[in-house]
Each structure stands twice: as C-alpha cells, then as structure tokens.
Amino acid sequence: MAARRAISTRTLQSLSLRPAVTVTSRACRMPHHPQQASQNAVRRIHATARQFQAATTTAASSPVEYPSNHDQIGQPVDTQMFIDNKLIASKADQWIELHDPATNNLVTRVPQNTDAEMKAAVASAEKAFESWKKTSLLARQQIMFKYVGLIRENWDRLAASITLEQGKTFADAKGDVLRGLQVAETACGITTQMQGEVLEVAKDMETRSYKEPLGVVAAICPFNFPAMIPLWTIPIATITGNTCIIKPSERDPGACMILAELAEKAGFPPGVINIIHGSAKTVDFILDEPAIKAISFVGSNKAGEYIYKRASENGKRCQANLGAKNHAAVLPDCNKNHALNAIAGAAFGAAGQRCMALSTLVLVGETSEWAPEIAERARQLNMNGGFEEGADLGPVISPQAKERIEALIATAEKEGATIALDGRGQKPEKYPNGNWVGPTIITNVKPEMTCYREEIFGPVLVCLNVPTLDEAIQLINENEYGNGAAIFTRSGATATRFQKEIEAGQVGINVPIPVPLPMFSFTGNKKSVAGGGANTFYGKPGMNFYTQQKTVTSFWQAQDAVSTKSSVNMPTQS
Image 1 (cartoon, rainbow, N blue to C red):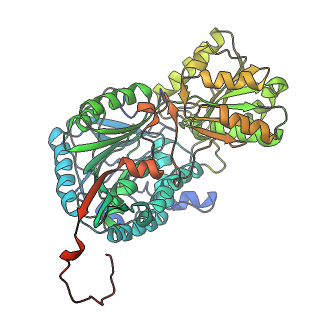
Image 2 (tube, rainbow, N blue to C red):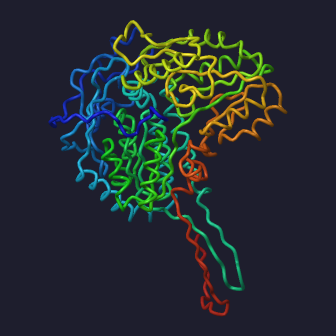
C-alpha cells in the first residue's frame, strides 16, 4: 500500500514538552438528531473518564461523551504512552502533529518516544509474561469476554476517535471497530482452538503436543484501520499467553489508546498490553529489540519488505500484509444493478484507503460501455466531513496523500487514459481546508500505465477493457499483487472457473471486498504478503503465528503404578 504508511515520511518536528491540559468541551455526546449537535457539543466529559482523559484528545472521553464534530480544538491534549496499565506522559523532545483530515486543525501531538521509554515498555511486557503465561486458559478467556463487552459499550466512542483523527465517516468507522471486535469475539472460543494432540505410540508410551506462547510480541499498525488492525493482534496474542507492544500509527493513535484503557478495565494485568509511539525510530527499535519474538505489520510494500527482512535477520517471526491492486471482472450476464452499486461502494468507501478497496475494474465485452453508469453512481456519493449526516466518504489522510493521488491521476491523462470522472479540486463547502479528493474514474487504461502499475490508495477506480473472460483472468494473474479479486456473473460455471484459475488469495463472487471473517484467515498472497503468504492474519494461521509447538514423549510402565486410592473430587481443569 504505497500510501498507507506505518512509518511516516514527514519530518518530525522538534517541540518542547508541555504538560497535558484539561480536555475542553470538544468531547461530547454523539447527537441522535442533527439539531442536537450544537447543544451536545458543549457537554463536558463526565467524571468516570478523568483518570484517562490525558491519553490523547480523542481518547479523553467516555462511552457516552465523545467528539461529534470537526470544530477546532482549543487546547489539544498530547498523546501519552500506556505502560503497566498506566498512562505516562512522554519526555520526548520530538513530537508529531496530528491534524483532522477534514479541516487540518490540530487534534493532538504524538511523541517520538525515547529509547528509555520504549525499553520500559519492553521490560513491563517481559515481567508480565512470566505470570501471564501461567494464567489458566479459562481465566484469560474470562478477561476476553469482559474486553469484548467493553468494546461494544465504547463502540461509538471508538468510532468517533477514528472519524476525527483518520477522517472516515462515522458509519464506516463503526465498521472498522466491528471487524476488529469480531476477532476478539472469535478469540473467546480459545478453549477449542488451543487443544493439543495425543497419541499412544508404543506400549505404555505416548506423545503429546502443546501450543505455548512465544513471549513478548509487537504490532506495527497502519493509519487506515486504527481499531481493526490493533485488534488483529491484541486478542489472539494475549489469549494465547503472550504479552504485547503495540505501535499505533502516529497519524491516528486515539482508538488504540481507548483499546488499552478498556483492556485495563477488563482485567488484563499490568504489562500484558503496552502502547508506544513514534515513527521510523520506534519501528527500528521493535525490529532490533531481542526480547520481542514476533512482529505483525500492515502497511506499504517498501516499509513491509524492509520490516520483514530485518525482523527475519534478527530471528523474529514476522507477518506482514503489504500492497494491493484488487481487481473485479464484470461479465455481461451479471446482475447489472447490483454490480454497479457494489463497485461504486467498494471503490470509493473510506476514500479508497483500504487494502482491499476495489481499485481496478476489468470490463469484459460489452460491459466496457457501463463506465458512464458507474460514474453516475459515484457522482451521487456525498463527500463530506465524517460526522456530517449522510456522508458517504471523507477526506484522505494527509495533504501529502492528496498530492500523491492527484499526481497519479495526472499521469493517466498524460499517458493516454480518459478521466471519465474527475475528483480533483472537489471539496465540501463547509470544510474547504481538508484533504479532499472526490471519486475519480479513469477509463481506457492499459496495463503499462502508471495508474495501473502503482497502488493509488485513494478514491480512484481504473478501468481496463478486455474482450473475453480468458483475457480477464490472464490480466489479473499477471499483476504482481494477490490480496483479492472478484467476479460479477450469474453463471455458476463461470464463477467456479474463475475461483479455480485466479491466483489472488481472497476471491469474491458477486462480493467486491471478499475479506473473510476471523474464523477463517486473511489470505492474501503474492507480493501482497511478505514471505509468500506463509504467515497470514487471524484464524488458525493467526493462532499458529502467536504460538509454538511443544511435543512431550513419556514412558510409564504399567507395573510401576503404586497408588491404591482413587480421587472422587470433580475435576475442574481450571
């Protein structure tokens, strides 16, 4: 994901540390009706959130009172660390300013944590591991049950943080939270997922296998899913007995800070979950710290390939989901109305900033004439601030991302493609200073064009025309990425052929974004997953990533038994 940076390319600003300030009336109850916004926007957070109010501006809230508009914040709160179940102000001398993408108003400052602060987080996780790994599976499960309940209770609050810091619409941000919550819910079934195996291999001899935790593990998270991606790691890693170091994106850490707060409330012991902040320096610390045994990463190919290589050289496990160019083949026999609606939603939702966004359309045969109708559906989408009622897509994450997206659109013009719908220069009247790029459709694209070869990571759909299904499959398979592919057709035989012959790891049949639920695994492949797709996220592969196998072979001769008294107590296995 060329633009989805977990390692920021912006220059860190050297600023003096200031004490955390009290949250202003910016935190408020999300209104049930638009006319309530002005009244609710002045409600102060209630006392139950006081101990956590300095976590970061958007985390300084409660389950019922949180940001609900894009108004300028009078006194932004500096983002803090989370170590030993405590919020700690950083002593950093470098800070990263975080701006609301809809307005570019300052929301918070994120520290580039010092070496001492990052080492303190690791020491906390190491200390916690010694007791956490010995905590029974049922006890960890009970904590996870509580964690799931707290996430549900704070669902809107988490979504509001995402909307303010990342720019998603409030409805889309709630979906971000849900997909992470589903991983936590699935982790509650750990008692059937961690069972070992046993086999009597000889008379009086048996071999058993167990899954054991690795130790301290880390996650380096991207900006585009501030809640979902941390929740790809926290539930699975902790319920299997590991302790965690989480580095949220420096562009939107608020949701992760809320998740840390909720973990403490759920009963996770101090040190099981720790949050550190920063950019490239923090990433390198995680890669080189000997105590960290495994690293999970989602982000761009450039950063991900570097992380995978350096982590592997340091003897660490690494799962890394990288870039994508997701295709959909549209056949003339498909349900046209369904296809057009699904394509517009999958291409432009979240302003195209999804690793599984539908970015490439392969129009087969006469469907090449459908591009104007897709453009008409896209024109109907409402680009607006994420808190505004009826918003369909928000801004892109930063001015730099906007500039890059518009530059790639310009290359398409230069190289001979047609801009069927141009989103450059569009902006909502209420938010003229945001990072706005409207839905854009580029037609008559050729495989050698820059707009096809590079991941745009914005609200841009490129359309290629082919005469047959054979050529559509060949075109898709020749692309270096393998996250996802889809087909729109009414033919079962055609769909079956497509799913068998297509190489992408996640295939949708009349489903434009075929991301599996967490009882399965996120199975991208080719250049979309470092290491050839061996270590994928959540599901059984995710469970295996955070555990190691141990086998024990024992030999007890039957005649050695000496006990003559039986136990009649009910075994509890806890």
